[in-house]
Amino acid sequence: MKEGFKRIYFLDELRGFALLAMVVHHTLYDVGFVLGYQWGYAAFDFLCLLQPIFWGIFIITSGVCSRLSRNTLKRGAIVLGCGLAVTLVTAVIMPLTGITGAEIYFGILSCLGACMIITGLLMKPIEKINPIAGMLIMAALFLIFYSVGNGSLLFGLIKLPHALYSTNWLMPLGFYKEGFFSADYFPLLPWLFMFLFGAFLGSYARAGAFPQTLYKSRSKALQAIGRNSLWVYLLHQPILYAIMYAISFLQLIF
Image (cartoon, rainbow, N blue to C red; front, side):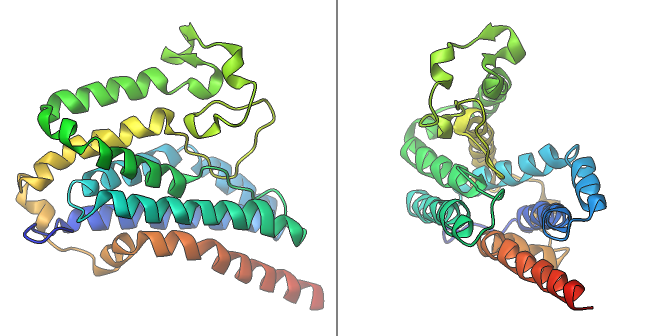
């Protein structure tokens, strides 16, 4: 955070909670993927109903924090680089070891990194727009572009040209060929608009105008997770894989 801003502990706790929920969700998937237990897949699929809530929390809070960051462009470059590293590991290195089905192309880190860079570049125009108007516009654009992955706008009312879906090179924007797979995928359309919604909301955080109750500390554990979200995201899957494969190895022995 920039110096002079009062810490909004609720943002750390909220992001920490969303990240913890994601770790639990991924653990259930790994139980099915690595250990082969169908109940892991079943629990994972059930929690997918709640997953968009945690996505929204994580992306909006990241957008809010972009208004409090010392250098949004620098942080965006770091996060985007970490996202590219995740792609390298999951799509190149892991398949060489025989582990497939976990490839990640433009996952949450790549999306957040790109959103931070775009927001940093647009910061001056963003600051000139009324925050409430900005949030309303971003919410509308998010809904308009939400169905891009299905080849349409406005939930099917406007069909998009098939040519957009003839290549995977436009995958970061949300356009991809049939058969494309990514274990974690957050295209800029529509998620950029959710991030920018958070950036406009962050105008109030920047002004210290959030309700006072949000500045109170409630959970040190969730704050720690929220403040170190990048490291938690990068390390949780390798740790989970190590645990799951250790359990699998012990099952073969015993």
